[in-house]
Image 1 (cartoon, rainbow, N blue to C red):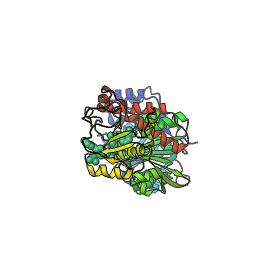
Image 2: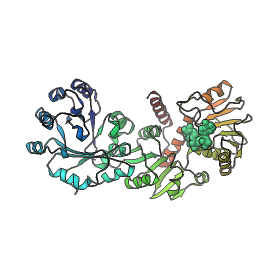
Image 3: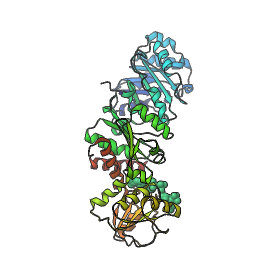
Image 4: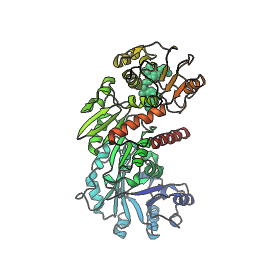
Amino acid sequence: MNRSQLCVTVTAPSTAELRRQRDQVTDADLVELRIDTVADPDVAGALAGRRHPVIVTCRASWEGGGFKGSEEERRRLLRDALAEGAEYVDIEFSAGFDDLIAETGGRRLVLSSHDFDAVPADLPERIRAMRATGAEVVKIAGKASCLSDCLRFLGLNQNGHHQGRAVLIAMGDAGLSTRVLASRFGSPWTYAGTLEQIGQVSARTLVGTYRFRSVSPTTTLFGLTGSPIGHSVSPAMHNAAFRAAGLDAVYLPLPAQNPDDFVTFAKGIGLAGASVTIPFKVALAERLDHVDAAAAKIGAINTIRTNHGRWEGRNTDGAGFLQPLMERGIPLRGLRASLLGAGGSARAVAAALVAEGAEVTVHARDPQKAAQVARLTGAAVGVWPPPEGWELLVNCTPIGMHPKTGTTPYAAPLTGRYVYDLVYNPAETQLMKDAAAAGCQTIGGLEMLVGQAVEQFRWWTGVQPEVSAMRQAARERLAEFQHS
Ligand code: NAP
């Protein structure tokens, strides 16, 4: 099985710092030393005492790099790197360093081509032309402006296109799949590092979160689509569950430009399933072969999967919401529940509670939206701000969410029995603090978040996930956001 290797890119302001950074790299097969980023390029100094094989790169500013010296100087540095025994030296295709190619016969050369604006239109021809130079490795990186741009790289490394395999990278957030699934794209290696502006992720994220070391060409792919999704904890939760269950699967953020972009990518790459968040919960439901009755009722899905070529959708928010209530043995039949907010989550929560026989009232600042949710779910409409009289209060608004952690959606005395806040960041909101002080039993949004993910995982894989691994991963990821 052809597994891709991991190359960690190291940049630094000085050669001494570059060496220090280089020596801190632990989990890598190769280290790329970007000597164009140092103020005092010294090849021998950068290579001395190295523990990993290296690629020495010195990109000029016109190539998107940091080197401001002359082309002659740059050529000399790269020649020095070869003479000092660097395993590879990276030269740009358009730099015209034909003399270096001729001198080496292409051995130990990575011939690269970068387009920071788009994925080049002539990819197959370009790879062929680059291979024809005799360079040992060819690398092409192009900026993906949408998810489906990644598909342009798929299949280029199959036999018949050229003699050897090329490193293929779609730059930008939309291109993450070409890095994590480097094996699927046929790349001999991919790059990790701190160059976030071109979509690089750290080796820790690639290996720790996205399980790069165990991803093969046949690893099953799941993902999350919507916008924005950069701060989602779902990749951490699902990847932790795949790891704990020993399943050969990986879950990626898939920032689609629009629903059609997602569908094109999903079909092209063979996506097995996905979580769906705003703003695609309704639009994607309309593009599926089948949506289950509960999701159809509220008009929104949050999960899709492929089943023998058919695309199916459902909504696990309701089941995820109910799980902590069931676990606590809270009787729902006849329970007076007041919901704050009339958005997507309020729909799922209202439908789930009504189905369990609760007496649900929807309160929202926009009475028309409250009425719409009530009509769809069989709930009643209440006034805003919501008065006392409930037994279960559910916050389905973002009020209290990080960073406005001191705010609460409820000003009246908390005289009911249970308070459930869907907000999960922070884990204990102001509303929950107030409710606990008033003697209510409280439930935080993290439990629902994990609950709906557990439902998704089961629906995709048929396997009961390790809930503690998912909860732990979610907590760690949330803590990272709070400290970033
Ligand atoms: P949504 O569709 O945008 O709906 C938000 C609702 O809150 C709308 O009715 C909105 O009213 C109302 N609202 C917003 N700010 C308000 C304010 N200052 N005063 C009064 N009402 C306000 O969002 P959603 O998807 O339902 O999500 C709501 C919250 O639940 C978010 O914090 C989300 O992170 C959380 N959530 C958690 C889970 C979980 O698993 N724990 C799952 C889903 C959602 P307008 O329409 O008038 O703006």
